[in-house]
Image (tube, rainbow, N blue to C red; front, side, top):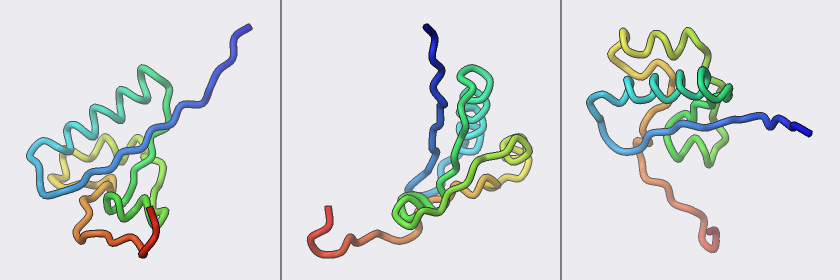
Length: 90
């Protein structure tokens, strides 16, 4: 008996600027789609987006245009401020 499981991965970046990061994001997204049939979720604003639930499914046009834009069109941005968990959390 064969069962299929839906595959989904999330991508986020954290920290400062990194040359070539858009190419890496695009390669991961396309590999996930083409080789694994996975849905790819872009997590917006780094770890802050995880905490606040800001994420979206990355679309094909979004991934294709990421290299030409020179910026991160997938809205998978770095977290610009440090996060502080409420006292007693975590």
